[in-house]
Image (cartoon, rainbow, N blue to C red; front, side, top):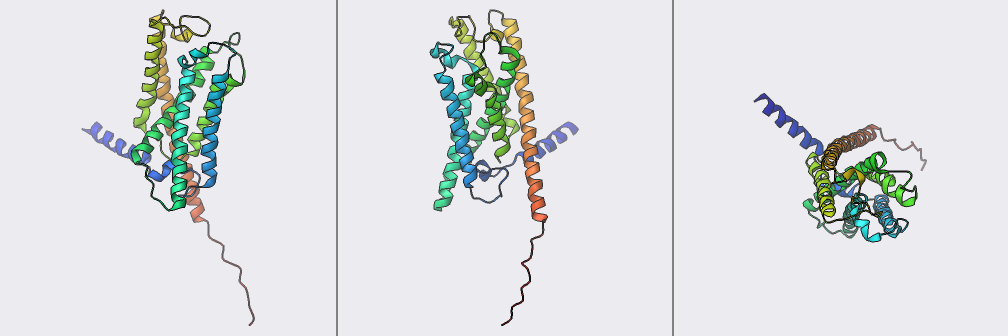
Length: 272
């Protein structure tokens, strides 16, 4: 009984922390809380989108390792597609809001559409951090993998770009959305297994995409998958806490600004 009451109170507290109005999905956290969309934030979202498109093009046009048809088999590139989709939706939402407000039209995007974007964005952030950590700790081999622009953009800049976006946006990260990065990871794992069973190889002809996911050693591969899921859960909670901290700092700055007394105009003596 006591546990049920505590759980109910905790769930209510979390819901209040995660509560977000629709306008938060097209606002910057560090702007005023009016319904308007600033040109600065609009430019940022387009810049964010263009950077991600550029990273995908760099990856697609990279022919140093050959076998471009194998581009879709790598988790890094699955992540790039995820970054692209969330950036596309986010840019569309902000651009649509900017246009509608300027034209005096009502926003026609549903709250559900914006929540889908929010879930995809948080999934992209968690995936980016996970890809960066796993690549540099488990996958990268200096004798095989070159430190070129593509490698840096896909395994370092990806996390920097998504971290900046986490800090910039105003909409909340919701705990319930933790299922999405886990589902995305399991979806790739399923693809990886099917690809192995069909005789697929990596770009160098090895019978696996990643050595840590060599299904000829199923116990080792399954253990790695379990560890990866635990890592994603940990990263998600960190991202969630960062989003709460971001909102708390923003609200504190806003409250401080509201407490600053407005300066009265200087006294002027006029003689008629």
